Image (cartoon, rainbow over all chains, first blue to last red; front, side, top):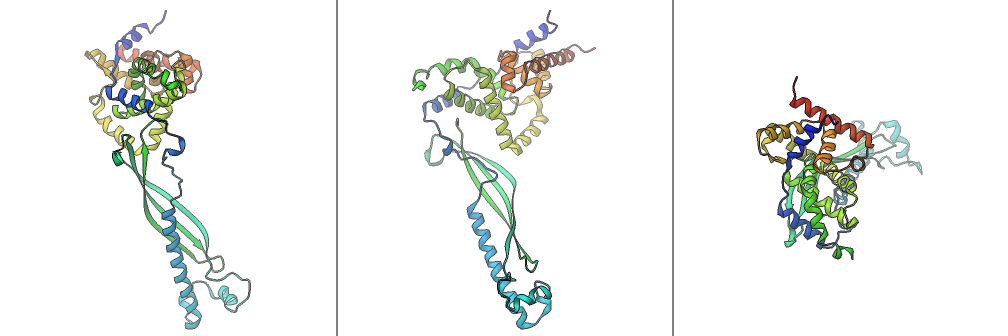
Amino acid sequence: MNDFSEIENELKKLRPAHVSRELFARIEQHLAGPEISEHEIIRPNRFRVNWVAIGFGLAAAALLIVFAQISTDRTPKQGDSISQISPAPETRPMLAGSGGAISSSEFVPAGATQVVYNTRNEGLQFPGGSERPLRRLRYQMHQTWQWRNPATGASLRVSYPSEEIVLIPISGQ
Amino acid sequence: MENIASHEDWKSCFSELAPGLLLFARQWVRSRADAEDIVQEAFVKFWRRNHKIDNRGLLYATVRSIALDRIRRDSRRTRREAEAVSELEQVVEPQFELVDETQFALAAAVQRLPHEQREVLVMKIWNELTFAEIACAMGISQNTAASRYRYALAALKRMFQPQ
């Protein structure tokens, strides 16, 4: 004999809460409507490439490289050893004009990080009178780009905050 | 297509399953609205692919998968909700229609069960799934499902019959 029949009977007396009529209406609306294909769904992808942010990052890096080049070009004219980016023994052969050597102002990408430090759910929206609600998520990130000059050992690092807003349709997939 | 022929069928299926499905979804989210979102997404997804309800294990697996996905997607909010609700405990949006003190105590005892036991209990008692269907929904063996069910009942019995 089942030892737990009494407690099972007590549990079966508990009635789960009713479902709202609104849920029926929502399901009916979705089943009647067209199916959303996979490519139409905007998915929050942690590793999605943010091209705008990368564009800004690269522009900032290019600007820094230009400044760095101006700085190193002026160094030999002034003869000021304190303002040199790299140690003198490494820069001297390149300044002498040896062909094929890596330029002291040439930086190569050394690393890139994108840290999502906050995700905020900003609730449902009905953009443009749409009947289908969209959930608005705001991702706050910190991006860091790093370049290194293999000839001199100098490195450049650009860090900046960025935000990305993703709208996710609330519907079946 | 089949959608037209089976358009009305979903209502009878859903009417029968909805309270149990909602209760099942509530095992992951505290808010009733979030649970309804999960049930809606799961049922629409399931019905569009199957147009019938003979594979209940798959339906509950869909609910489970969407709930877990939502938790991962929105972990910070869920944590804040869980913290807030844990302070209020059963005051917010009861999962059952409680009629007396005994039922209130029993519902509270169910909430204190370990999650994996509670999942099996909810599927077995209020959704009337077989152990085979529960095993399919949870990706475990039937024996494990049956064991968890027995552990849950034993724990509840201990809570209500203190030595």
